[in-house]
Image (cartoon, rainbow, N blue to C red; front, side, top):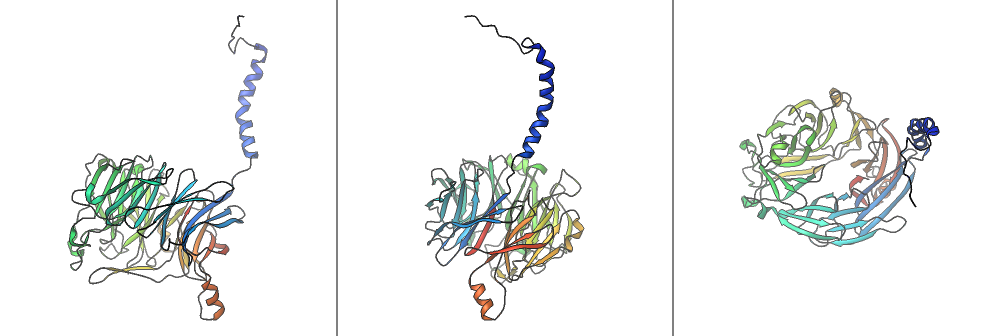
Length: 468
């Protein structure tokens, strides 16, 4: 049988006007239906925690609109994980990986299954792990003594183990920080200190291809301020790169300089070609001095008036405290401000246009043979509104009833809430001491108002936090 195929204009011509009206109305109808559909209001954070029975990962599920706590439970706990540390989550939010500061069973992969208990697989990477990041189906873990492991999350196994002492010339040292490129084609590693005896060298940024781990560029940072090198410690003989900033948007690769008390900036495209260009250093101290600031906490924020620019907020741990805001493209300081030393990692919350940080009170100082670290936290959470950079010297302060530690945004693009870890109220009476003995607490703070919304007991003592 022969079948005639008609074009749209040939078939049912008397409906053509009606069809055109339907086509015109379709987007409007779709928008109305979209508005009528229920929207997700849940916000989930994960945190590693330490407890007497061992460490693990906990989940906190909150309704971002009503602040109702939907779930707050332990996903995984292991007696051998006595030093739970950093964690990362996969792009599909179905897999978590955490590291434990140990040489045995020092990583755990947790798969989240709807309506069922989490599925956990333990594995061991070489060395004592520190940095951990996820890209695609892989995790990249940096450990001491130059170890770097590529983990297949689906197989729960190390598929490649390399060492910076062998992959770099001169030999490289411990990986401090890892950042994955937005397109996940490469990663940047910071190597901070030299090895004792300078058998292997830090003070460099290393770009590697993913997932092959092939070296693209080994950027050995200039050691231009020998007066700041510790004469009694041969591991502290350079700028001390630590926290990486990767900004393809502004063509900048940056890193905080712990020992020099500054920030380094260079062109990203040149480094990706394997031929890095000049490196510019800027001081992060409030007075512009060198070697006093010890910057090791930062975040990226948008420029308040220039949509094409990115800024970074850098906070210091030295006696001078304070911080600064740096324009990545211009490689210059926009503003410097006073602040207590030892503010924790600043977190940008777009929903409130606020940078939030907690006063964990870390203090770094140069001792005769090393940089010493001490902690004296307060109960303060500081909120900086990004619309006026000059106002950074006068943040809104939220006081909690006990010493604070880290904080995390609940859902930064949709919610102004942050969760802050703090200890129970300080005091000398038995009731207060008993409350503190229960462990840490979590406070939910609305950064748009500076109000504490609710508090709840944490599972153990939270170490690192991240939002889904």
